[in-house]
Image (cartoon, rainbow, N blue to C red; front, top):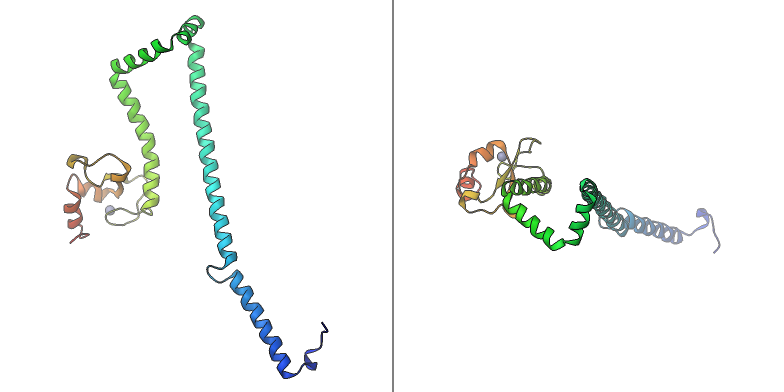
Length: 196
Ligand SMILES: [Zn+2]
């Protein structure tokens, strides 16, 4: 292709060249800046994938740390057990299983406390999940929740047969939670002007 000066082009050629330039600019804009453009889409997909991978990696690290702690505890327990006893226990797994079951039956109170602690640990996760789900706002008045003053609230109160599960839990601010008490959800929501 022979390049010529602009001044050497005929008016038609000049216009055609300008049109080509405009089309090229538009293509470039569409590709890079138009909402939903391929470049944007690709960048978003990559960001989402990276976030997911990061989360999965963090989860894996936490899982490994927990497994290591459990193993260390078991090892420490074993360390405290006299050698002969250790050998006898290893040789009698059925007896040990039965022994554990009997112990838990005899120590129901301790066992309940252990389960409570476990549940409490789980609840921290539930709070975080609900906080994200509700975008940090009270389920009733929609005001921003203040960390430390957040109440875990049963949608259908336990007293009215609600279950103690994630599906029946929500976060509420202190005033709303205290105003609700054990009222039926419809009655309370109506009071708040949420239902007709
Ligand atoms: Zn509220």
